[in-house]
Amino acid sequence: MITHHDSDSGFIIDQPSYMIAFSSVLAFVVILSIIHCFAPRLLSRSSTIHGDRTPKMVLPDEPLMLSHRVPGELVEGTFNIRNVGKAPLEYQLFPSCGCVILTPLDGRIASSEFQPIRVGMKTLGYGQEKSVLIHLKTNDLSLVETDYRVTAFCPSPLETTPSVINLGRIPPAVEKNIRLTVAYKSAQSYAMTTSNHERIGMHRISSKGLVDEWDLRIHAGSKIGFVTDQIRIDIEGYSVPMTIPIVGEIVDEMIISPSYVALMKKQRGKGYRDVILIASRRDGEPFGRIDRIDKPDHILFHEIDREESIKRRRIRVEFRGDHPQDLSEPSIVRFYFMGMKRPVVVRFQPCRDR
Image (cartoon, rainbow, N blue to C red; front, top):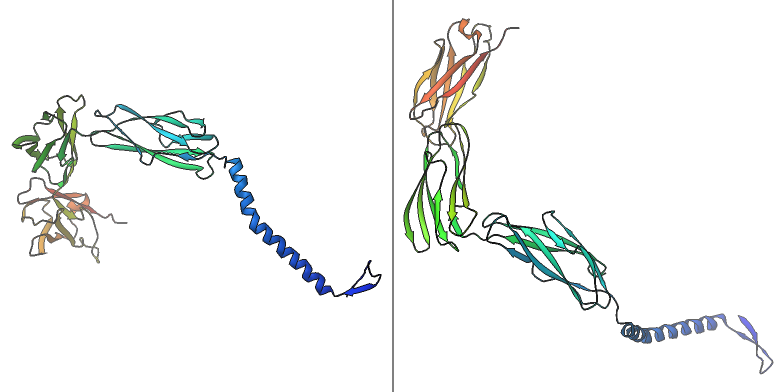
Protein backbone atom coordinates (compact mmCIF):
# COMPACT_ATOMS: atom_id res chain seq x y z
CA MET A 1 0.00 0.00 0.00
CA ILE A 2 1.32 3.44 -1.02
CA THR A 3 0.00 6.63 0.78
CA HIS A 4 0.07 10.11 -0.77
CA HIS A 5 -1.53 13.53 -0.04
CA ASP A 6 -4.33 14.90 -2.28
CA SER A 7 -3.78 18.68 -2.50
CA ASP A 8 -7.32 19.41 -3.77
CA SER A 9 -9.31 17.60 -1.12
CA GLY A 10 -6.80 17.78 1.66
CA PHE A 11 -7.22 14.09 2.36
CA ILE A 12 -4.55 11.45 2.50
CA ILE A 13 -5.33 8.67 -0.05
CA ASP A 14 -3.93 5.17 0.02
CA GLN A 15 -3.28 3.55 -3.49
CA PRO A 16 -2.39 -0.13 -4.06
CA SER A 17 1.21 -0.74 -5.30
CA TYR A 18 0.05 -3.04 -8.11
CA MET A 19 -1.80 -0.12 -9.72
CA ILE A 20 1.41 1.88 -9.81
CA ALA A 21 3.29 -1.05 -11.43
CA PHE A 22 0.56 -1.53 -14.05
CA SER A 23 0.66 2.14 -14.99
CA SER A 24 4.46 2.00 -15.46
CA VAL A 25 4.25 -1.06 -17.73
CA LEU A 26 1.46 0.53 -19.79
CA ALA A 27 3.52 3.69 -20.30
CA PHE A 28 6.55 1.63 -21.39
CA VAL A 29 4.46 -0.29 -23.97
CA VAL A 30 3.07 2.95 -25.39
CA ILE A 31 6.62 4.36 -25.81
CA LEU A 32 7.80 1.20 -27.61
CA SER A 33 4.80 1.36 -29.98
CA ILE A 34 5.61 4.95 -30.89
CA ILE A 35 9.26 4.07 -31.57
CA HIS A 36 8.24 1.06 -33.69
CA CYS A 37 5.91 3.16 -35.83
CA PHE A 38 8.10 6.18 -36.42
CA ALA A 39 11.70 4.87 -36.27
CA PRO A 40 11.74 3.27 -39.80
CA ARG A 41 10.45 6.51 -41.29
CA LEU A 42 13.07 8.52 -39.46
CA LEU A 43 15.87 6.13 -40.53
CA SER A 44 14.64 6.13 -44.12
CA ARG A 45 14.53 9.91 -44.14
CA SER A 46 18.06 10.05 -42.67
CA SER A 47 19.33 7.60 -45.32
CA THR A 48 17.76 9.70 -48.06
CA ILE A 49 19.27 12.88 -46.70
CA HIS A 50 22.80 11.42 -46.40
CA GLY A 51 22.57 9.31 -49.63
CA ASP A 52 24.16 6.03 -48.30
CA ARG A 53 27.64 7.41 -48.88
CA THR A 54 29.66 4.19 -49.27
CA PRO A 55 31.81 2.89 -52.17
CA LYS A 56 30.63 0.00 -54.34
CA MET A 57 33.06 -1.94 -56.61
CA VAL A 58 31.95 -3.68 -59.80
CA LEU A 59 34.26 -5.95 -61.86
CA PRO A 60 33.65 -7.42 -65.35
CA ASP A 61 31.45 -10.53 -65.38
CA GLU A 62 33.87 -12.46 -67.61
CA PRO A 63 37.63 -13.06 -67.06
CA LEU A 64 40.09 -11.18 -69.24
CA MET A 65 41.30 -13.31 -72.19
CA LEU A 66 44.61 -12.34 -73.84
CA SER A 67 45.74 -13.94 -77.09
CA HIS A 68 48.85 -13.85 -79.30
CA ARG A 69 49.76 -15.94 -82.34
CA VAL A 70 53.43 -16.37 -81.35
CA PRO A 71 54.51 -18.37 -78.27
CA GLY A 72 56.57 -16.57 -75.65
CA GLU A 73 55.45 -13.09 -76.71
CA LEU A 74 54.15 -10.42 -74.31
CA VAL A 75 50.43 -9.80 -74.80
CA GLU A 76 48.59 -6.93 -73.12
CA GLY A 77 45.01 -6.00 -72.33
CA THR A 78 42.88 -3.99 -69.89
CA PHE A 79 39.92 -4.47 -67.57
CA ASN A 80 37.97 -1.81 -65.67
CA ILE A 81 37.30 -1.41 -61.95
CA ARG A 82 34.06 0.58 -61.58
CA ASN A 83 32.78 2.47 -58.54
CA VAL A 84 28.98 2.68 -58.56
CA GLY A 85 28.81 3.85 -54.92
CA LYS A 86 28.49 7.31 -53.43
CA ALA A 87 31.94 7.51 -51.83
CA PRO A 88 35.51 7.15 -53.21
CA LEU A 89 36.67 3.54 -53.73
CA GLU A 90 40.20 2.62 -52.64
CA TYR A 91 41.80 -0.56 -54.04
CA GLN A 92 45.02 -2.60 -54.06
CA LEU A 93 46.03 -5.33 -56.54
CA PHE A 94 48.13 -8.43 -55.73
CA PRO A 95 48.95 -10.81 -58.66
CA SER A 96 49.32 -14.54 -57.87
CA CYS A 97 52.36 -14.77 -60.18
CA GLY A 98 55.37 -12.49 -60.63
CA CYS A 99 55.09 -13.05 -64.38
CA VAL A 100 52.17 -10.57 -64.60
CA ILE A 101 52.51 -6.84 -65.27
CA LEU A 102 49.81 -4.74 -63.53
CA THR A 103 49.39 -0.95 -63.74
CA PRO A 104 48.35 0.76 -61.51
CA LEU A 105 48.67 -1.50 -58.48
CA ASP A 106 46.59 0.77 -56.21
CA GLY A 107 44.48 3.89 -56.41
CA ARG A 108 41.36 5.81 -55.54
CA ILE A 109 38.29 5.90 -57.80
CA ALA A 110 35.70 8.66 -57.45
CA SER A 111 31.97 7.94 -57.35
CA SER A 112 30.47 6.86 -60.72
CA GLU A 113 33.97 6.62 -62.26
CA PHE A 114 36.16 3.70 -63.39
CA GLN A 115 39.86 2.87 -63.49
CA PRO A 116 41.38 0.90 -66.46
CA ILE A 117 43.91 -1.73 -65.25
CA ARG A 118 46.61 -2.66 -67.78
CA VAL A 119 47.66 -6.34 -67.70
CA GLY A 120 50.66 -7.91 -69.46
CA MET A 121 51.55 -11.64 -69.70
CA LYS A 122 53.71 -13.88 -71.89
CA THR A 123 52.06 -16.70 -73.79
CA LEU A 124 53.13 -20.32 -73.50
CA GLY A 125 53.43 -22.82 -76.39
CA TYR A 126 50.99 -23.35 -79.24
CA GLY A 127 47.57 -24.41 -78.03
CA GLN A 128 48.46 -23.75 -74.38
CA GLU A 129 46.91 -21.28 -71.96
CA LYS A 130 48.13 -19.77 -68.71
CA SER A 131 45.78 -18.37 -66.05
CA VAL A 132 46.60 -16.19 -63.04
CA LEU A 133 44.44 -14.70 -60.31
CA ILE A 134 44.58 -11.01 -59.37
CA HIS A 135 43.65 -10.51 -55.74
CA LEU A 136 41.87 -7.23 -54.94
CA LYS A 137 41.49 -5.50 -51.57
CA THR A 138 39.09 -2.54 -51.28
CA ASN A 139 37.25 -0.34 -48.78
CA ASP A 140 33.92 -1.62 -50.17
CA LEU A 141 32.43 -3.20 -47.04
CA SER A 142 30.27 -5.55 -49.13
CA LEU A 143 33.29 -6.85 -51.10
CA VAL A 144 36.44 -6.25 -49.08
CA GLU A 145 38.49 -8.96 -50.90
CA THR A 146 37.95 -10.82 -54.16
CA ASP A 147 39.81 -12.35 -57.14
CA TYR A 148 39.77 -11.67 -60.87
CA ARG A 149 41.12 -14.14 -63.44
CA VAL A 150 43.32 -13.28 -66.42
CA THR A 151 44.21 -15.90 -69.08
CA ALA A 152 46.82 -15.74 -71.85
CA PHE A 153 46.37 -18.12 -74.79
CA CYS A 154 48.40 -18.91 -77.90
CA PRO A 155 46.19 -20.48 -80.61
CA SER A 156 47.72 -23.33 -82.58
CA PRO A 157 47.94 -22.89 -86.37
CA LEU A 158 47.81 -26.69 -86.75
CA GLU A 159 46.13 -29.43 -84.77
CA THR A 160 48.03 -32.71 -84.48
CA THR A 161 46.55 -36.00 -83.31
CA PRO A 162 48.16 -37.27 -81.18
CA SER A 163 49.78 -34.13 -79.75
CA VAL A 164 52.30 -36.32 -77.88
CA ILE A 165 53.55 -39.68 -79.21
CA ASN A 166 53.80 -42.04 -76.25
CA LEU A 167 55.54 -45.32 -77.09
CA GLY A 168 54.91 -46.72 -73.62
CA ARG A 169 57.18 -49.47 -72.27
CA ILE A 170 58.71 -51.30 -75.23
CA PRO A 171 61.48 -53.88 -75.67
CA PRO A 172 64.76 -52.99 -77.39
CA ALA A 173 65.11 -52.82 -81.19
CA VAL A 174 61.34 -52.71 -81.76
CA GLU A 175 59.83 -50.56 -84.52
CA LYS A 176 56.43 -48.95 -83.97
CA ASN A 177 54.09 -47.57 -86.61
CA ILE A 178 52.15 -44.47 -85.57
CA ARG A 179 49.34 -42.80 -87.54
CA LEU A 180 49.58 -39.00 -87.26
CA THR A 181 46.82 -36.60 -88.34
CA VAL A 182 47.61 -32.94 -89.08
CA ALA A 183 44.63 -30.57 -89.46
CA TYR A 184 45.00 -27.03 -90.83
CA LYS A 185 43.57 -24.19 -88.73
CA SER A 186 45.23 -20.86 -89.52
CA ALA A 187 48.34 -22.24 -91.26
CA GLN A 188 48.71 -22.30 -95.05
CA SER A 189 51.61 -24.76 -95.37
CA TYR A 190 54.14 -26.56 -93.20
CA ALA A 191 57.23 -28.79 -93.32
CA MET A 192 57.75 -31.70 -90.91
CA THR A 193 61.32 -32.75 -90.06
CA THR A 194 63.33 -34.61 -87.42
CA SER A 195 66.97 -34.54 -86.40
CA ASN A 196 67.02 -38.32 -85.85
CA HIS A 197 66.52 -39.73 -89.34
CA GLU A 198 67.95 -43.14 -88.41
CA ARG A 199 65.24 -43.85 -85.87
CA ILE A 200 62.27 -41.83 -87.16
CA GLY A 201 60.80 -42.23 -90.63
CA MET A 202 57.89 -40.10 -91.94
CA HIS A 203 55.66 -40.59 -94.98
CA ARG A 204 52.53 -38.62 -95.95
CA ILE A 205 49.94 -41.15 -97.07
CA SER A 206 46.96 -38.88 -97.83
CA SER A 207 45.85 -35.25 -98.02
CA LYS A 208 42.10 -34.62 -98.01
CA GLY A 209 40.91 -31.03 -97.76
CA LEU A 210 42.44 -29.51 -94.65
CA VAL A 211 43.60 -32.81 -93.12
CA ASP A 212 46.84 -34.71 -93.80
CA GLU A 213 47.53 -38.30 -92.76
CA TRP A 214 51.10 -39.36 -91.97
CA ASP A 215 52.65 -42.76 -91.30
CA LEU A 216 55.48 -42.62 -88.75
CA ARG A 217 57.96 -45.45 -88.23
CA ILE A 218 59.81 -45.07 -84.93
CA HIS A 219 62.65 -47.43 -84.05
CA ALA A 220 63.08 -47.86 -80.31
CA GLY A 221 66.81 -48.48 -80.38
CA SER A 222 68.73 -51.00 -78.29
CA LYS A 223 69.75 -48.92 -75.28
CA ILE A 224 67.73 -49.51 -72.11
CA GLY A 225 66.27 -46.29 -70.71
CA PHE A 226 63.87 -43.47 -71.47
CA VAL A 227 63.07 -42.22 -74.98
CA THR A 228 63.09 -38.42 -75.43
CA ASP A 229 62.79 -37.23 -79.01
CA GLN A 230 60.60 -34.92 -81.07
CA ILE A 231 59.25 -34.07 -84.49
CA ARG A 232 59.59 -30.46 -85.65
CA ILE A 233 56.95 -28.67 -87.73
CA ASP A 234 57.98 -25.42 -89.43
CA ILE A 235 54.92 -23.33 -90.38
CA GLU A 236 54.85 -20.70 -93.10
CA GLY A 237 54.48 -17.21 -91.64
CA TYR A 238 55.35 -18.29 -88.07
CA SER A 239 58.77 -17.68 -86.57
CA VAL A 240 58.42 -20.36 -83.86
CA PRO A 241 58.05 -24.01 -84.95
CA MET A 242 55.65 -26.53 -83.41
CA THR A 243 56.98 -29.72 -81.85
CA ILE A 244 55.49 -33.16 -81.24
CA PRO A 245 57.28 -34.85 -78.31
CA ILE A 246 58.11 -38.56 -78.52
CA VAL A 247 58.33 -40.28 -75.13
CA GLY A 248 58.60 -43.85 -73.87
CA GLU A 249 60.82 -46.31 -72.05
CA ILE A 250 62.90 -49.13 -73.49
CA VAL A 251 62.92 -52.05 -71.07
CA ASP A 252 64.08 -55.66 -71.03
CA GLU A 253 61.36 -57.88 -72.46
CA MET A 254 61.93 -60.69 -70.00
CA ILE A 255 61.98 -60.69 -66.25
CA ILE A 256 63.47 -63.46 -64.14
CA SER A 257 62.74 -63.09 -60.48
CA PRO A 258 64.82 -62.91 -58.45
CA SER A 259 67.62 -61.52 -60.60
CA TYR A 260 70.04 -61.77 -57.66
CA VAL A 261 70.14 -64.98 -55.60
CA ALA A 262 71.90 -65.42 -52.27
CA LEU A 263 72.61 -69.18 -52.07
CA MET A 264 71.75 -70.91 -48.81
CA LYS A 265 73.46 -74.02 -47.41
CA LYS A 266 71.53 -77.26 -47.08
CA GLN A 267 70.49 -78.41 -43.65
CA ARG A 268 73.49 -80.70 -43.22
CA GLY A 269 75.81 -78.03 -44.55
CA LYS A 270 76.78 -79.91 -47.74
CA GLY A 271 76.06 -78.06 -50.97
CA TYR A 272 73.35 -75.47 -51.51
CA ARG A 273 69.58 -75.55 -51.52
CA ASP A 274 67.69 -75.57 -54.79
CA VAL A 275 66.42 -72.20 -56.03
CA ILE A 276 63.14 -71.50 -57.85
CA LEU A 277 63.22 -68.81 -60.57
CA ILE A 278 60.10 -67.35 -62.22
CA ALA A 279 60.38 -66.13 -65.82
CA SER A 280 57.77 -63.81 -67.38
CA ARG A 281 57.36 -60.93 -69.80
CA ARG A 282 56.87 -57.32 -68.69
CA ASP A 283 53.88 -56.82 -71.00
CA GLY A 284 52.25 -60.10 -69.96
CA GLU A 285 52.38 -61.50 -73.51
CA PRO A 286 53.40 -65.13 -74.24
CA PHE A 287 57.06 -65.83 -74.94
CA GLY A 288 59.03 -68.56 -76.66
CA ARG A 289 61.07 -71.32 -75.10
CA ILE A 290 64.54 -70.88 -73.69
CA ASP A 291 66.93 -71.12 -76.62
CA ARG A 292 70.16 -71.48 -74.64
CA ILE A 293 71.72 -70.77 -71.28
CA ASP A 294 75.28 -69.53 -70.76
CA LYS A 295 76.30 -70.87 -67.34
CA PRO A 296 79.02 -72.62 -65.37
CA ASP A 297 79.01 -76.43 -65.57
CA HIS A 298 78.23 -76.90 -61.88
CA ILE A 299 74.82 -75.21 -62.18
CA LEU A 300 71.86 -77.17 -63.58
CA PHE A 301 68.42 -75.87 -64.63
CA HIS A 302 65.16 -77.77 -64.84
CA GLU A 303 61.84 -76.36 -66.07
CA ILE A 304 59.37 -77.79 -63.55
CA ASP A 305 56.07 -76.31 -64.78
CA ARG A 306 54.52 -73.62 -66.97
CA GLU A 307 51.15 -72.07 -67.70
CA GLU A 308 49.25 -73.09 -70.82
CA SER A 309 49.48 -69.56 -72.22
CA ILE A 310 53.28 -69.65 -71.79
CA LYS A 311 53.13 -66.36 -69.88
CA ARG A 312 54.94 -67.64 -66.80
CA ARG A 313 57.49 -70.39 -66.13
CA ARG A 314 59.13 -71.81 -63.00
CA ILE A 315 62.72 -73.00 -63.23
CA ARG A 316 64.54 -75.02 -60.57
CA VAL A 317 68.26 -74.41 -60.16
CA GLU A 318 70.46 -77.25 -58.84
CA PHE A 319 74.11 -77.23 -57.85
CA ARG A 320 76.40 -80.22 -58.39
CA GLY A 321 78.64 -81.63 -55.69
CA ASP A 322 78.55 -81.33 -51.97
CA HIS A 323 81.12 -78.54 -51.88
CA PRO A 324 81.38 -77.03 -55.35
CA GLN A 325 84.57 -75.03 -55.39
CA ASP A 326 83.33 -73.00 -58.34
CA LEU A 327 80.69 -71.38 -56.12
CA SER A 328 83.28 -69.68 -53.95
CA GLU A 329 82.74 -66.57 -56.12
CA PRO A 330 79.58 -65.11 -57.69
CA SER A 331 78.34 -66.89 -60.80
CA ILE A 332 76.60 -65.12 -63.69
CA VAL A 333 74.04 -66.97 -65.80
CA ARG A 334 72.56 -65.63 -69.07
CA PHE A 335 69.21 -66.85 -70.41
CA TYR A 336 68.45 -66.49 -74.14
CA PHE A 337 64.79 -66.80 -75.16
CA MET A 338 63.57 -67.51 -78.68
CA GLY A 339 63.14 -64.37 -80.79
CA MET A 340 64.84 -62.10 -78.27
CA LYS A 341 68.23 -60.58 -78.88
CA ARG A 342 69.17 -59.57 -75.35
CA PRO A 343 69.79 -62.17 -72.63
CA VAL A 344 68.31 -62.03 -69.15
CA VAL A 345 71.03 -62.09 -66.49
CA VAL A 346 70.82 -63.76 -63.07
CA ARG A 347 73.61 -63.52 -60.47
CA PHE A 348 74.22 -66.22 -57.86
CA GLN A 349 76.14 -65.26 -54.74
CA PRO A 350 77.11 -68.01 -52.26
CA CYS A 351 76.73 -67.21 -48.56
CA ARG A 352 79.96 -67.17 -46.60
CA ASP A 353 80.45 -69.65 -43.76
CA ARG A 354 80.66 -67.99 -40.37
